[in-house]
Amino acid sequence: MRKRVGESGVGSAKSDSHVSEKEERGTSPGSVTTRSGWWAWMKRGLIGFFVIYVSAAFAPRLFPGVVKFLVYAHTVRVPFFTDLSRPADLSLNHTLNMYLTPEDGITVAVWHTVPDSLWEEAQGKGPDWYKESLANGAPIFIYLHGNGGTRGASHRVGLVKVLSATGYHVLSLDYRGFAESTGEPTEPGLTTDALYLYQWVKAHSGNSLVCIWGHSLGTGVATNMALKLQEQGTSVDGVIIESPFTNARHAGKNHPFAWFYFRFPWFDYFFLDPLKDNHVFFTNDDNLRKLKIPLLILHAEDDLIVPFHMGQELYDIARSAQNSEERVKMVRFNKELGYVHNGSYKDPRMPAIIREFVESLSS
Image (cartoon, rainbow, N blue to C red):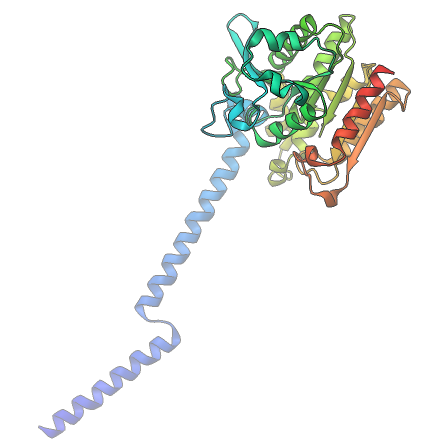
């Protein structure tokens, strides 16, 4: 009995020792299972990433709606849960919300913000009062925003407040397809919307100066409409383009999204050629070669969406085309300020910069 017990004890000890060796070497069944499961998860993840990466490259070529979203991002309606028909909710309580009809079946939303000096008088006033106020002699800005979001985005509201505080009327347009405006965005459609708003303003503003301010995508709309007006024999009083790109193709090639695909085979075919196929051009460079208007370019050196060199290139083009350093100006914002693509309105010098430009239009 004792021998059997002893043998049993020795066998148990050997078994325990054998298990311990396996555990030390990391070859226990649990360890093997864990390692194989981790590797399987990694393989699935890599395969999934590759499929998404390649599919995203084909999407612009195969689905025109993808191109429209990438260019306009009009379905991204920030800020969320905001009633844009009530601008007072965004501290614009001297602002009228209204709707215009640039074409049959198309309605676009517009905010009219009066100068801060009229804040008290504006309380409780209706559309007729706001319309008549346009002829009070204060300069007027038509604001054409960039892609994505609405006229209620924080940086857009911030600029409207700066312009109003400096003494100007501001008409903020949400193009067709943006916010509650009807229709679908196209380059000719956005240009038509801006032109209609300009003509509506001119019909009610008497001799007041009317200037155009375009930001990002809105710079393409601004120069398009200015050139259309010039071809019709009308000159815009002045144009400010903030964070401008040379043209849609160059903007697409320099966009951060393109960094992931820049070395992708046939990059131009898959990503840039669909812009032309969908009639997206926004040729600021060609427009500025033809325009004869007072122009101010604003650009931050640390702009990650539209590189600063594009604004500099447009400045050189416009200055050469107009052969003037007086009619074409550029303000660069140092990268240490951190304004990137949307923050130039925060600069404490901005009111003085705008005022100097506007006053030069009257001299």
